[in-house]
Image 1 (cartoon, rainbow, N blue to C red):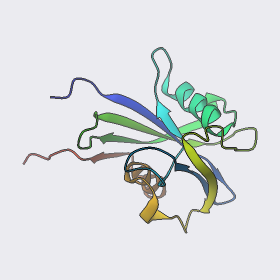
Image 2 (spheres, rainbow, N blue to C red; image 1 turned 60 degrees about the horizontal axis):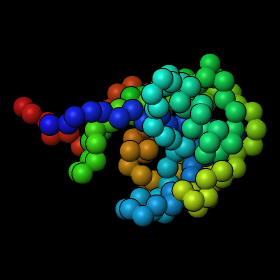
Image 3 (cartoon, helix red, strand yellow; image 1 turned 60 degrees about the vertical axis):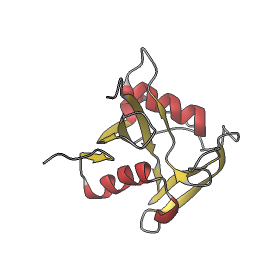
Image 4 (cartoon, helix red, strand yellow; image 1 turned 180 degrees about the horizontal axis):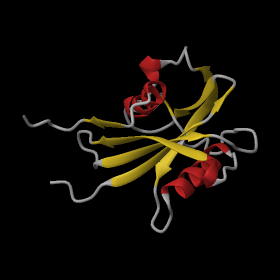
Length: 148
């Protein structure tokens, strides 16, 4: 039985038809895989504030939480990982130029055309949110055993 559910926030930063992805640096199976700027909701903050904070911490842009649009919720569980709700936000407005502010967690940042993403090397959880953006799907589940 799952004791708790984490809440993750993810941001889609899109400029001129290109999506910003970061290449993860870690000691697990996700090392070298592309993903969205993301992080966990902290106690006492709203989801939009958390998304703006994570974007600033990871890629240095400044976002007013009012400049975010929630477009997808994913309920996810993976083997050996805690269950989580992933909230995916489109960044409508920001200031600053994205830079890699966490080189210990990220090899590089790169812009990819939305119609030419490196789908085979994007973390599946992030890819689910990216696909939902294109399909306008508002909810998905990953990793849960479905009962009839």
